[in-house]
Figure 1 (cartoon, rainbow, N blue to C red):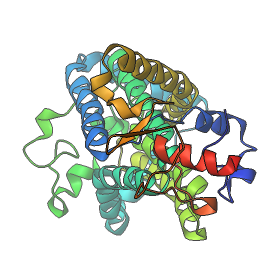
Figure 2: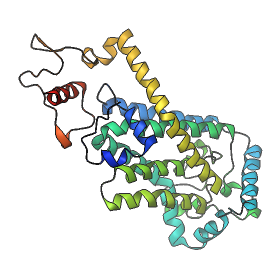
Figure 3: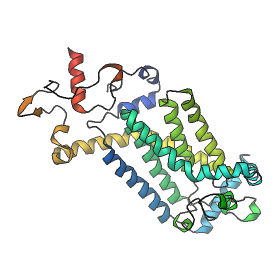
Figure 4: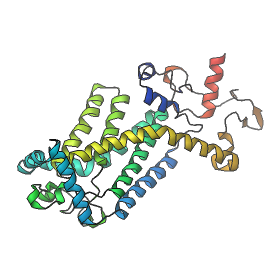
Length: 333
């Protein structure tokens, strides 16, 4: 399928990445995405994720056993980095307090900010990125349900972990129970440690910054953000190292499934156009005539005061079908 953003100067070098190029190729949407449909969709998925975490509360004994088993596996593999990091964050408040703020807030700020940035400036790529994020989040929810896991901070004291969120709770808005605001700790599932979606979402943000950021600072942030988030989740005793590895694996699975999900969504949209054309609007179909002021025109034919597409390298990737028709006609001439 031809790339809709082919005129962009960065398209050629990025076409070397087979998986992401194929994914972008499947993102061509027959309609322009609208914020008033995107926001409810994202809110719905996040609400399902949050509700699923609450409903997936397993018994604490089983969750504790799972946590201890992960810790034993890490010790056998010599991957136990949580203890030294946690001791460092516990001893040095100048590290522990910023780490707690990082853990409690950044995934609520950075992830939506990058989604908005992609929506406004990289419309074609946005749909693939959003689908990847949502698919991976739902896969993570399956992990919480099947494998409730006690985080290091909730293990018995003899295992050597300190809950830095509780230790430094006077400095932030969170309580001693969890990273949720004070008084709301009981509304969260504290045994949803495996996989770490803090790390998964941070990785997604890093990939977006690295691939689409145009400045060296953006690319550096794309590396630093997921790396520091991994350190923070272990140092605050909220996750094991293998939780972070599982978060990366979940994002990989979501990336592989994204083209399938998007093709299914495209088929559903096509079916809705056939069965219920009023849902998508009569002008949304490909190849439909453009009617204005009682005059019918063929696809691509310009009429007075019709909105012009922006040709050349400055063309918007997420152009509407009418704009796409104009640019195609211009190219043919």
